[in-house]
Length: 316
Image: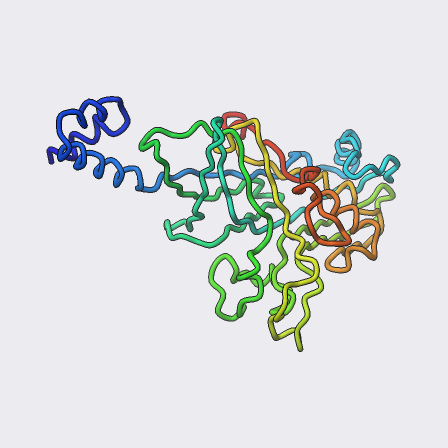
């Protein structure tokens, strides 16, 4: 009881130094207690939102078209894109791992993803759509600051599934990898990022589009066997955002960075052969990927899909 009371007052203050000067035994006891306390995980929540909000509402196509046309088309250097489609339905999901929060002093805080029940997971899955434009990921980390929270000023994460998990047996997969809608095959692995839309173009013709990002060039004897060698194009996206507190403001998924690149044809599918279609190539470039190699260009620094979110108090 005495030790418990002492560590509350001493662990995060200069008093620890004074305590150590009183005796080596007492110093050791207090230090061990503080170290044990500091190793207890701190929890945070990371919020992802689908932006802009105009894309989430089932408004008349003409109004949506007007709103979307006001968004600059500067994604990948295309200056004369055709008039954009209007979308009445947007569904997107993506996996992410290696989530790390950054603080103002250059500190790095690797995050452990938790389930709703508080169980650790190897990765997280975010799903957003017209009716659910916000998703929350529970996280846990350890800090040498004890109960004091770091001054977070940025975030890093990877969009995708780790290579060690991407070609596991889908029949025995656990959450979140047990979502069959995010699986191509045992051979090809998972869809890292999936976006499906339905709407109409400027001529009033119904449109449906599908963009699924994942590893390609995965070779094995059949679709029911995992590849023995790494896929030719892994297509994992490294995201680094700085200059804001992601815990307070969250991370926004800029849907228009992708939808502005969808052609105005009735059906558009970009699901694997990315280099063979200029629209597909543009979509990968919006993630900062080199279409020819499947690798990030300059650590995917040019990506336009993820950005700083809005402060929690500004969300409805």
